[in-house]
Length: 485
Image 1: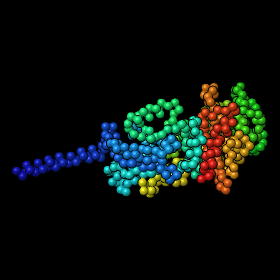
Image 2 (image 1 turned 120 degrees about the vertical axis):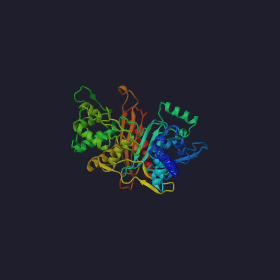
Image 3 (image 1 turned 45 degrees about the horizontal axis):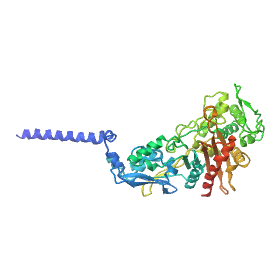
Image 4 (image 1 turned 45 degrees about the vertical axis):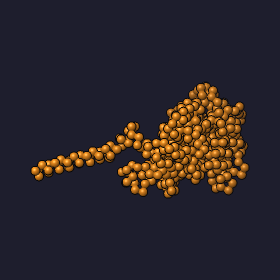
């Protein structure tokens, strides 16, 4: 009889071991696949059972959480949603997350193990903690000035602190209110359909996800390449540039918007944006030299993140001499985001050294304890320091005596470059108006801000005037906001 009891006990022990093994398989080995199963709503319900952490600008939150009382309890709310949408993105119960809401989702949602006082227990339970906060580098005044300056026009603004790489403003218009997508009801679905179908693409972040032909603002890169290569040694020496300039190997003639460009010195050619001079300079520097300088400034970089991804700006490396001439004046296949052109201006302002731009200063717990910090950002020497000094001199001349007078700020040093970019079939599209600049306040030891502005509907009678008339005042307002803080 005892033998049968032992057998039964052993069998029960085996059954218990099998049950425990299966429970371990389900709860540990297969946990990930069950969590990811679309039919499992528990992770989604748990995700929205607590308020989400906030995104902060100037020490104050621009996001919040609203208690809906539903099964997915907390919905995202936004302060001045359209103003900050290119930075925050949206956090939607139906359509997921974008931009900072996506890049910093582990912290904001409470899933980052660093938010737990017991990380190992967090890993075992996978229970979300209290959401943390994300502190941005944005300057409220600069962001507001950029948004108001663009107004109803289609375009974008990017502003950077040259010495650190901190992004001070990132604006794209037209914009939208991310709160319209927060819930999971019919209203959110209607808003999504309306925004997706809008021909003006309000959800497109033109500051970092749209590339444009940079037009004459690219002449900053070409001038730096020519100075670094020794093609130009004296800013006031004639450049032996014919007008019109016949593109090498072709019968096509390149002309200028105004007079006085034949054999113009680099200083005058930069101030009045002579296409013929810069096209020839690009050819004289050569494909290798132009490509190297453009790459140093950040062109053709596919890895830039701020922390969300940035569309790569491009400079074609496989061009003939005629195509190189056009590329060197910001046409042909040359394309850039506004952030990239702000980086170009920042490198000039910072003595030829470019700091990698970033948007998140630090992340914190809900009580304010620091989790991560941006730290010192990587830097690279884009051009010689002496070249950067001469480029600052050239850019100041544009504002003081050339095509960029509308960017001048009394009492401050301001450098700039206007640009008008042709586009469309046969260049039939309305030109894009560009302005890139930097500013140093009275009493400051170094430039405090570098800005790039593009306005898509910035047409004018004369090409370069549109950059000065439309884009330069916006850049000036942003620079003033930073200098006045």
